[in-house]
Image (cartoon, rainbow, N blue to C red; front, side, top):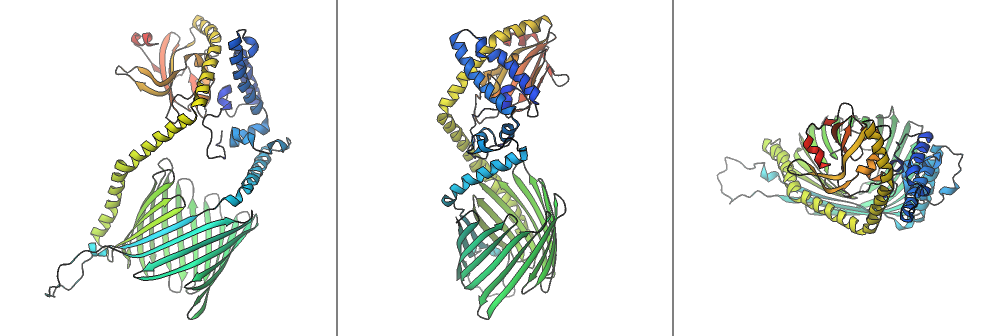
Length: 566
């Protein structure tokens, strides 16, 4: 089941597939069969005791709801894409039942957009960038004439901030197609300051294009016109015209770019800059989920160069490793760096730039939400080996020390606080879910007793011990109940013809009679079972498929000592 569009998904929402114990690719026949089988256990007419009858009604109503949604291809499409909350979207009932799944998703997204439009005036998108330039060349570069014997006093290695700039903008949505962006920037370098006020109007001209008009007032007046147009299914283009007033008159500049998507991962771009200086640039980009590479060749009157860059993306670690080279008529440079997500909304990056004639630079980047902080540090005007070594090693060592001593403890404490807050906020729901799971388990017991009798007669599959949750072991290696729940009865009820099959699920806490004993923690399922009078055990992850008896990957328990632990 895909995640809901809402960011605050209800972690206690029902998993309809797990509830019926069917896979996400299950056919209508398989869903009907699963529903009929569970109805034999949970149908209210199967129970005469008033308390059990009431509990059966609650469980059966959930099963019936899951069954009705999963056998309806239209509702199932919405559920698979957006979850249970998608079924509650206002206006969903007007969707024609003759529409295809793709049309249903498009209609749903249209309804979502209409909801967003009603909240449009309440939203802004503030963005900001702060740049602090540091000159630390005195730490690595030596100046002065060795033959000069005149003493001028003690020398000091100065590290100074030689430039700073601040940019801030706020988006003001006017209509669905029109947006006003207001921003400004201030900058100072070596005691000289400047600034500008910017106002931009952006309009969505069609589903294939947009245009943007920007005016600037500060160190002279400026005007720019930009546009985007989807030319074909694979090709698009952008164009911009800039006019800037200077003491010598109006200075125009124009740029046009055409891009073509060769396939899913390869794109080519051709850019022409008609200004001073003018240039033609050709770029080839390869990008997918794990890699990003670009090759650029620019030919210009004063600036011709060749560049190659590559970025390796580590999805699980939420990190990127980057390397780049650039050679041109004015010099060359080599760049390498690393970027890592350190918290939910924060990224930290650092890169070394070693070039001629620019020298050695260390660039530190911090991203926090929509705010960016840049710290370019000039270490050396020459290719100083010590500047390169310290610029590479010090940030890496600092990162690991800070991460170990500050970031990790902070994130751990924050996670514990969030989990505790969730438990407190949803304490009533959790208690209800636990009570419902217990009631469902009680309803299974008679069926399970008959099931065990049948399996014992044919030396079939019998669950001896089953724990679900955060597994912990005692000193003798035996699993303890800790933050776990006993799910022996629940699993035995799912056995049919000496087989236990549970498809892959979002979480096993959605299975009949299960609940989440440790919200937010990593959970596992431990099963000890007897098959053909031999004892086996297996430990599975929360989402892993259960298929018992296993043929080759199971672990047999030869010792009789474990029988007493059941």
